[in-house]
Length: 119
Image (tube, rainbow, N blue to C red; front, side, top):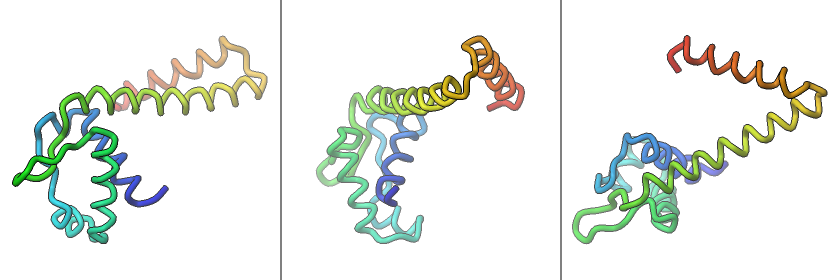
């Protein structure tokens, strides 16, 4: 995955998880490039992608801020990604001849383990 895609994905996760809220400004291109020690053009490309995806919007004289409705869009996208990953794993389990009850037990066991670990 390209670096700009990774940056865009991390920002979307931050929006979906509430770490970045509607109306909140994101760091400038130069600031984030300096912080991450990468080319400013890479950050600019990630920000353009996020604007195209209606996650960020430009505010004249201020910078880029989290757009209205971005939280819901990012949460929906995150759910879809997780659903796709789950589907892939479940298909692999079925192809491995695991029966549905055994798959459910595995999933429930892993969920319980994550809860115990505080994840």
